[in-house]
Length: 71
Image (cartoon, rainbow, N blue to C red; front, side, top):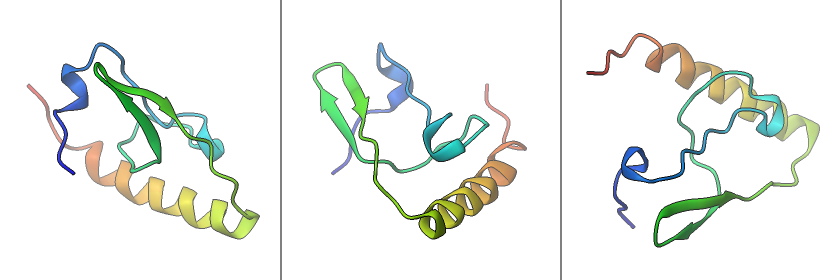
């Protein structure tokens, strides 16, 4: 499903704090979407091993996107 850019939404959601992600990054997370965009990020129950893999993935994405310039 393609959705309008979250930047156009009146609500901004970042995964910061979810599973100890400590930086702003763009990740795919299960969420609730309303007429105004993302309304809630669903907390996942994951094992410690899955959490470690999720954090590693978030760090890889963050290291790529931190150098991307926006205008």
